[in-house]
Amino acid sequence: MTAPAMPLNVAVEACPPSGIRRYFDVERRMPGSISLGVGEPDFSTPEPIRNAVIASLQSGETSYTANSGLPELRDAICRMTASSIDVEYDPETECLVTVGVSEGLDLALRALLNAGDQVVVAEPCYVSYIPCIRFAGGVAVTVPTSASEGFRCDPERVLGAITPRTKAILVASPANPTGVTQSIDDLKAIVDIAEKYGLYIISDEIYARLRYEGVHSSAAQFNRERTILLNGFSKAYAMTGWRVAYACAPQRVLSLLARIHQYTMLCAPRVSQVAALEALRVGEPFVQAMLQEYDDRRRFVVQALHTAGLPCVTPTGAFYAFPDIRPTGLTSDRFCERLLDEQQLAVVPGSAFGSAGEGHIRCSYAASMQKLQTAMERLTQFVQPLIPREAIPQ
Ligand code: PLP
Image 1 (tube, rainbow, N blue to C red):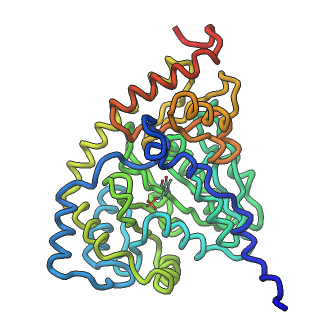
Image 2: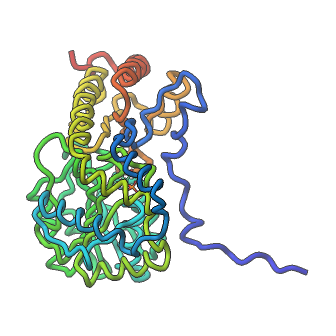
Image 3: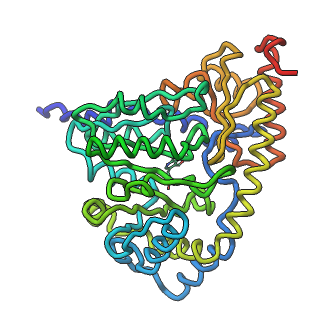
């Protein structure tokens, strides 16, 4: 007789699959369809970066690197961080090259949390945050944000969510899925809360270089000792497939992230680190050119959404628009299902980013202008019969 199999991990079993995945790969599965569902650049990694990797491979550089990453890459990351946000990190002890911000986030959570510790996070938020908090044994405490407040993460609400079990506040600016950036005053007020209650800030800055208005600010500028800064190459340098990023934090904290990384990952792939180093060396003009393209597309999409009768908080960063679809009377799930069926256009339901995202859809404008034009025509055709005429701005 065999005994029934032991139960699997309850936190993982309880976690539903990502609500985004359903809208991936649509263009391949449905000929003639358009997807604005995927959150990744439509550009290839700039050629000099690819060439540097080819040269490195041809000269036989295929081994592990130091656990924390190539020293010259960590040097370059710390120099860039000092010049962009004026915060100094020691490349030897305060910088770790990770396999995407995804790994950095997981390491940060695992290094900080004991079972039952709470992490405060604004919603709607990036789909991985809440599952990763739970996988690390923590509890996510969400603070709703809303279109009527420009998706501002109100420090008063953050304060209201703090309990004796709170360990960290997770901040993303610019944010996915809303594309909004937090003001310096709000960021500072959130850091003040962290200081007052002895908390850490996990600062996801993956979209820092994709800002269309104002300059990027980081929680680390206000208190580097309490901040784990996560940033990477996926978005700004069109390098999602390379899986390379970094974490910077004071040595006491970073050494714990590095310890987990050392045992679980050993090191980020060497080829990707070579690519990242070249990106920092020669990538800036390419980033500027992509940024200009995204900005043109952003203006076009936001205007088209408004004209179609879907109000949209103006995104100031990343490459997402998060319009309000409540004028159509549909739930975000139903809206996306019908839009895909009737117009072969894929966007992501706001509910995939938490309950505060309901009533919205995420449209990525990391797609060619031609594709965006057709997509906005299809979207307009879909919503027109659903929205009362008087609700559409003339
Ligand atoms: N953080 C945010 C806010 C994201 O939107 C994403 C990807 O979409 C990530 C992190 C993951 O980035 P990476 O490719 O560096 O793992």
